[in-house]
Image 1: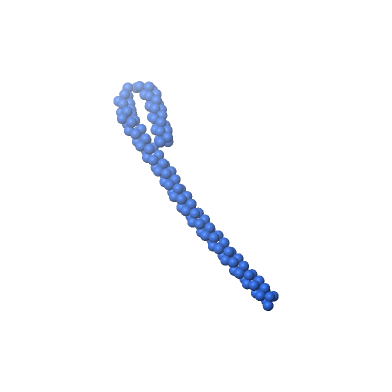
Image 2: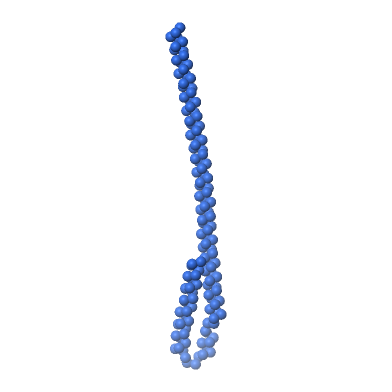
Length: 129
């Protein structure tokens, strides 16, 4: 909106400058050519049409810029959500691997304890007999 307002203000200033330059030219050309001056003079309706066209164009470009900005933000948000989901799945997979590794270690310890107890039992059995 701000860009549209600034561009419309700039357009109005340009029109005002053109009028003042045209007004200065009119003072110099007072040679009885009033008919040609009247034909070349810009009417209020024409000025209004120019301003409305400029405002419409600036609003369209502003709307497109905002649309692109919001489209980019929406795409960025979707990308970030997708990345967060991938990160969550990766962390869940890593946690599952870690749990599985701990279970494997515990199983290995239990087997080692059973083997040690069996050897101790066999040793004590051989010593006592």
